Each structure stands twice: as C-alpha cells, then as structure tokens.
Image (cartoon, rainbow, N blue to C red; front, side, top):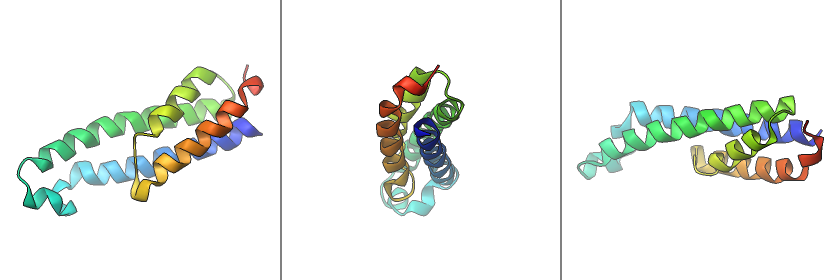
Length: 110
C-alpha cells in the first residue's frame, strides 16, 4: 500500500508542476517580474524547460512506484520532484511526502 500512496503523491506533484511550468514557459511576461526586469523572461523560459524535464522524471518515478518496479528510479524521481516547485510549492511538498513514504516502503519493491 505504501508504494501506491507514494506513487499517487508523485503523480500529483508531477501534474501540478507540469501545469505550473507550462504556464510559465508559455507566458513568462504574465508573472509581472519579467515585465519589470529585462532578461528575466528568457531565464523563466529556460527554467520552465528544465523544470518540465524534472516533472516528467517525477511522473515516471510515480508510475514506477505505483507499479512497484525500479525503486531507484522512483526515488530519483521523488528527489528531482523537490526542485519543481509548482503552484504555491505544492509540487515540492507532495514530492517530499512521496519521498518519505517511498523510503519507508523499500522492501515492497521487486
């Protein structure tokens, strides 16, 4: 049961992060800061692209946790999910919860 709970938290973290960074990646000028300071829009686009890759790895880790396969990949996905932020930091919080539950469920993986 623990790997499934961890996987659900990781999948939720990935979905939240993907929606946030897709918004930032496509609309960097809407965040306000990018309109005031020149060059911030380009930095936000690059950060959005990197965070999207991290979010996809978090999603993959969540799927592996649900399937109870490849514990190391699930662990790496949960650790990388800590850096994705998301709306109001929810993605990082869900990744942390998933990481803790995943670490406690090592013996349930094949």
